[in-house]
Length: 324
Image (tube, rainbow, N blue to C red; front, top):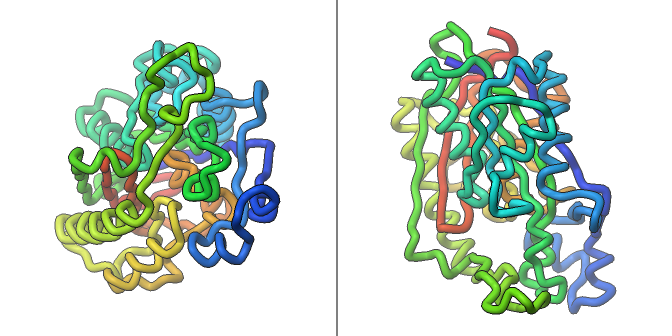
């Protein structure tokens, strides 16, 4: 089927620590760290970076690590909920910047976007449509955040992660289990509503709003069920998972999932302390960082699980190969 031939990431230039937020919010480092696991987050610089520029940077690193050129890439998929413009897609703008010709499109499944993208790409490989697919998860949610809303500004950061997915004749390479789910009736608990008056630049209606308690409860229940369903479809147990790459939203969610599914907490990789919740970028950034450390080995089972606005959630279990 396919394997991940290269990974890359792009981290914005501006760092915002918990102490920085405590200077103007009623909060402190201990309060934020205890409840979320976040110590700092990275934010795009005004007029310097955006979702496209981060995507391009991550993509170039992924292609270099994969040993692929622009001529090798057959398709570009970008998972994002924060495009720089409505039309054309972020993927089109990234492909234009890189000089890639071929189909390019976006997926908006919020924080689940990268997992959704993996499932779509897997279908393309099953149909033998493409040899190399560039899949990017990128978000700049700071553009939607009210800096004075303590419930959201402490959580979210910006970033991009990218992978090059390459076809292989090795039959057990790629996804061995998939589950996608959602409940659109829960859309109001995490959303960014359109501005009612486009002439008003600062309009609270355009900020991200979140019912944190409800999101937490839904996430834990949905992720537990999604991972369990995927394990069952792949005919494996939680103990068979080598590494768990869960969406980096809150360290307490990660702890709860490991407890409920009896997965060794040491298998659950995290970097939320450095970047916060980077939405669709969180899983591929984490993947790129761990891949850089050469911690993945041939045959490892990697479980990816995302959950976010929609509500959406999804799990993929991938059998890792470096170069099958």
